[in-house]
Length: 110
Length: 420
Image (tube, rainbow over all chains, first blue to last red; front, side, top):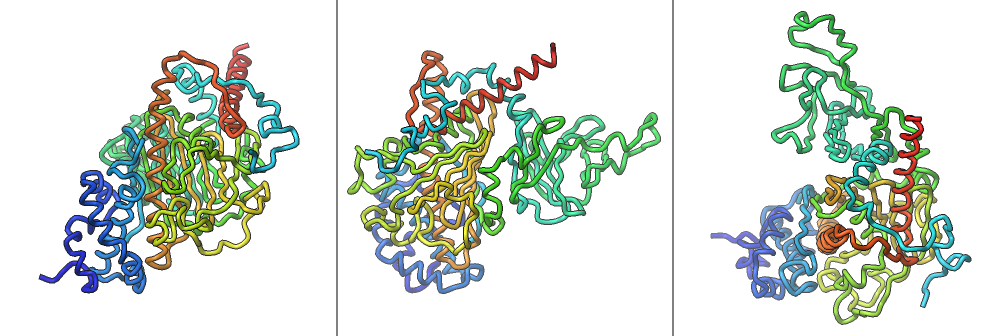
């Protein structure tokens, strides 16, 4: 079976099933349901190659991303989401957000 | 201690002496009686921003807006002549809601040639005229000219669609906005069409939530995570560089070193790689010379402008993009918060990623405000305390509640006058 991601990023296939998600709502939900250990593993593995991943995506026109590049971009978006927990709050949930919700109801694609 | 010069009077608050400097009450933010007054005195008199012209791209494009505070729903539509019109969203025949999908209290949008009522099939043109009545000859002297949709005063300022629910607005939209806000004329809002939209049902009065976005005094305490732990200074205060009031509207500017000009340890790793974050992209496409209304204090190291447009709108101008908030009351103790981050459309994947991280970090810190305000609402409702001190950094909070009180007082006077 071929992978979801570009060959150069095959080492991250193990995260693709969880984190290649099209919408912020999905990424936020998975973050809130994840353990810190899982998110730290993803974050620390991907961070050193994040710049390179962005460069690869950026070599394509925004509206014409091949499927595997689109998946890589989704992984970048999930990295941003996970970084909120790993780099900033040290917990899955935003510190001091109490019972508040804020739903993203509109966003550009991809 | 002061990093920025104060006006000659010694403080921003004393620069506007009508405000006074004593403690204020927040009874206006939980009293059911006051809420009832606000409905009539403010939301049925002020111009209210309910959308952008980009939401109506072509003839027949429409959207509905639920205004619980005014107990009405509005349908806004672009007509064949290109103009934008607003109507109460109700069929003249038996009072059915005209434009809605599966849930009558939820907003909807679409494109149509005519509005057709689902109940008995009455049809209205895009200009509101009643065009078709099923079995018209069964009615008694029905003149279709008498049964067009009920219009709502509607006007557009720089692409923002405003409505006014008064029988006859006391001011034109431009008069209402006044010189400070209309000095923003020409800002390229129309270029910033890539929008990240957020909504929340929040457990606080609409004014309390607005208060959290019109002072930065709370930032070090509530949002310490805006800077990484290594450079976090619990003693650091926050001082705005400029404040300005005009009628019921108000604004503040921040200044100082920009996030991207600071040493790398002031940014999170994800921000450094994405070259964007808490205050948006480090670089944005040039928008040319800004209008005179931007940075009215003429700060050399300008940061952001925070405009509070009465009653319930905030526009935050960053470099090359803006944030647009709306606070819609749904009860004395709740409101619906709407926020839009508006960027120039990304030309590259990298620019899109810059926008994504800005939208993600916006949500993190807005969640802290939203979470905390439920606590403020709950405690204020004890009705125990009625005198709260506000400092000079909180001048916009003071002015906001004073403006609300002024509008309510004027309404009371008018009501008493009409009874006399």
